[in-house]
Amino acid sequence: MVLSENALTVLRKRYLMRDTSGKVTETPEEMFYRVAGSVAEAERNYDGDVEYWTERFLNIMKDLRFLPNSPAMMNAGKSSGQLAACFVLPVEDSMDSIFNSLKNAALILQSGGGTGFSFSRLRPKSDLVHSTGGIASGPVSFMRVFNTATEVIKQGGARRGANMGILRIDHPDILDFIRIKRKAGELANFNISVAVTDAFMKALSHAGEYDLINPRTGQIYKKVRAKEVFGEIVESAWETGDPGVVFIDAINRDNPTPHLGNMESTNPCGEQPLLPYEACVLGSINVNHYVAQGQARQLIDFESLSRDIETAVRFLDDAIDVNKYPLLDIEVMHKGNRKIGLGIMGWADMLISLEIPYASKKAFELAGEFMRFFRETARQCSAELAGQRGVFPNFSRSVYASQGMTEMRNATTTTIAPTGTLSIIADCSSGIEPLFALAYKRLIMDTELSEMNSHFFKTAEQFGFYSDSLKEQILIKGNLRGIRGIPEKIKRLYKTAHEISFRDHIEMQSRFQKYTDNAVSKTINMARNAKKDDIAQAFLLAFEKGCKGVTVFRYGTRKRGTLVRFSDSD
Image (cartoon, rainbow, N blue to C red; front, side):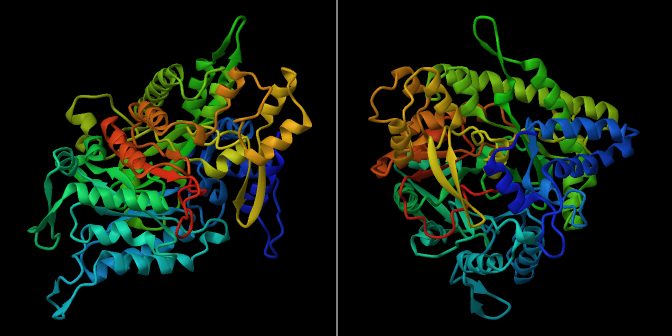
């Protein structure tokens, strides 16, 4: 194995097994073997060859072509054995339900998972509580309780608590929710997103009003101007980076099992919408590994990629069977729908290898073509597994059955995750993001890591424009703007996140979303001097382009609380 120093640091800090004194007791190779062997045990359920699939799983991970989500690498083969990253828990309008969900969230967070909640069913503040004759405190007050509980949970000492809190745009307390993170320290362990409906977007486009609905009674609470509420979302996002928005109706139009209920929330980074009590195991393929040198040009090795997608889909399906679930309700739901989320990382690296600028028509077209192939292949692999192992138990109640579609082993197969720490281990760019910078520092578990794009410096040496002065300038600036002596072609190829317009960020996200079953984790980076109107236009464009959600982050924003969106919630 070839691992970078940063990869080794992250593995030692978070993934490798330790003895009772805290001393690391396994090597990275042993870790991958532990994960591969543990997951391959599921093959016994289907008369599969455990040793053969252990080797297949081991090779794809050891070569850093595929990595599963963090809980799988941390917990596989251990007594905890919880392998899923994404969970959604219901929060109903009763004290019993609220605190039962809090207890369940504690178990999930401790196991390394991230939890999403919709607080939209809770009655608004000052509403009547019949059982006591008092008045309700509202959803935001209960979010503070969840936040405090998360603060004291260590997730096995390896991952900090990460939550998603969602409130519908038509909830009477929506303005309190939108404004909450403007206060320093509020909801530090939450990302928050507004569940935006088509009805709201229609009202916004017509400069009209829409209804706020009391969830307890189902009655109209009052009418408000859509433009004023949208303005508050923009103000908070410009100031703090929160809230993001999720287009909840778009999400439910792609719900594969609508007869089981509507999806109301996502996981902490927004890429995995789930039904209450659902979970999902994620994994990502480093696509830069499949750039092959052709005689006259560089090509993508789709044949090798197909084989690895097959292995990865099988790995994730096996992980569902060997997973040790924190709750029986979650096990029933996950095994009922068998959702998996295979995605990619290293996209920006692959574009550079192909000599295609990230913000270009050619890159956008390739994104759609590539992800269409990726999803079609993943679905074909799931269909083949269905032929061998049977369809997911809720198949007959799914859109696949009602629309006469192919039998599937998994209700969903593809997700684009942020791959925070996974991309450090794989030494590649994260998810489908552009390069964040050519040199920067990042904090992982209180350890500062220096990131430098070695590929760029090799290119500089190859083309004869490397110098110590160039390196010093890049270490200070993080990008190539204003640095003389660099060919324009190279500058276009190595544009960083803040040099790319929000329109191009969203265009890339939308191209991937079109061929992704679940959703796409993508941060729309903006410069410090971005205007509020830029934020507004980004939200509107994301809706127009068919994205399922969007997060906008203006550089230098004083993020009020823990920065979860760019964390390690893989």
